[in-house]
Image (cartoon, rainbow, N blue to C red):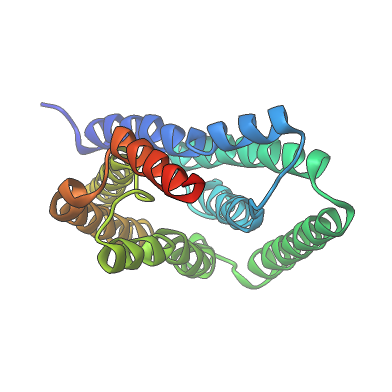
Length: 236
């Protein structure tokens, strides 16, 4: 008879693999920045926000806060490393004013985490209290992270085009939410369930929107054809 813990570990390992894929999704952007030696119009905010989210989840998964959550620590620890690498590349090729902005954000995050750690370890004298204190913060920031595609979903509805909502990213986001929700429900953890349940729902809605509007989105060849026609009109 397979134990619940064994099944949960397997689901958590699958969740680690899927989440790792999500963390790698910005890689083409940073390869582009590295090749062009310029950040152009890219914003550092998503990566700064993801870094803070990962730091909170790593703290949540530590034995001093929420024991038996090593799989939460491993993937979010990996996330910290990857987001740190992305921000390093961004910092190297950003103009001076943007560099200062990134440094201010990072300093603010480190100060915030220092306060959180100090307060939790001072006030929370039991695992239950520490879990609740850090878990609430994880739910808030995790929900904000998962809610970020709402603007893209609105754009899809308004433009009736899925150009800026890649199918594979939507699919992986959905699978990631489902996997971590299942992980949380096998040994009920409300703080992992809430943000990831929302993530699964939003991922599913993205897939529905993709199904509704993918046919109305011009293909790459059609876009090139339209571009050529516009150029011919301008030259005439």
